[in-house]
Image (cartoon, rainbow, N blue to C red; front, side, top):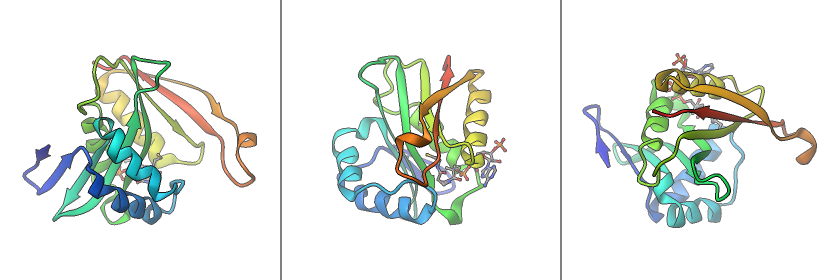
Length: 164
Ligand SMILES: CC(C)(COP(=O)(O)OP(=O)(O)OC[C@H]1O[C@@H](n2cnc3c(N)ncnc32)[C@H](O)[C@@H]1OP(=O)(O)O)[C@@H](O)C(=O)NCCC(=O)NCCS
């Protein structure tokens, strides 16, 4: 856990955070809203590769991820979200930095995430992180529009490496 001078606490989640993460995902209005069960499962079984941000004991941001079983040197960032009232203040970057130092980081060399073509904020966020780490971004198709029911954009895989 790290507590900052501005009162922000960044820490791995506990089971008690699951419902608040689910609620924050809904508030972003952009992220795919999964079931509350899934966020509880992440908090219970994948907490070592997730981070939450708390301000005055309220959840204001989170990042969830996992180590893909087939790519042991990768850390896959699944969703990152910042409360709409707290966006644009650098919290997204702080969350991703904390994620890259999470207890489950191990000997990871590559950050992976998927981004849809219209999500400019997310693209900017990961370009900024790659720049900070002196890493290169390689993009490739991941989930195509046809894989989803109608109305969902494609998701492109961003691989950011090497992480130093
Ligand atoms: C994406 C998100 C997490 C970024 O968090 P944030 O706290 O607002 O981001 P930061 O303040 O750390 O800024 C990160 C970079 O993104 C840029 N950025 C932030 N919001 C932006 C916006 N709406 N449009 C364009 N760029 C934006 C910032 O300028 C910064 O780039 P820079 O370092 O080159 O100046 C946040 O906008 C969010 O929760 N969006 C909804 C959920 C989502 O889309 N998640 C990502 C997909 S999993």
